[in-house]
Amino acid sequence: MQAYNQNLTDADLAVTEQARQKIAGLVQDTGGEACAVRIYVSGGGCSGMNYGMTFAEQTAGTDSVMGDAGGFQLVVDPVAFSFLKGAEIDYVDDGVNASFVFNNVFQAVGGSGACGGCGGGAV
Picture (cartoon, rainbow, N blue to C red):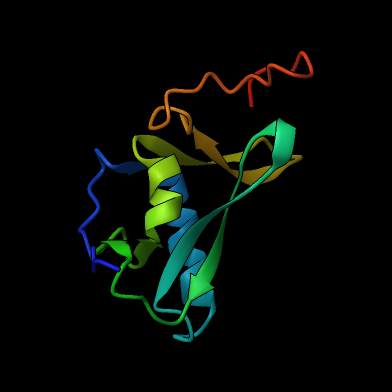
């Protein structure tokens, strides 16, 4: 497999300031055990893909990496990147619920986010 090791930019994957601050705090809380945050995509069936993040202790030669994203590195493998190109990661805390939100995730694949088989709405 070809080694990508591409440098990600905000044009590839945007990260809001709120998300950067929250991720940086979470990485700092690991006490140096995590060197990066890996963004992943997994199959979600009719409801679409599932997007998430986990701590990464290392990167692979095929990963795309956003160097200093605010005190941490973001790492994305080639398959996940194909679904994430042009997306935005945000962190929303409304006082009751707090979570990371992946916006505009269908931009790269040209989808609408709707499920044609079950009358579904936007993801």
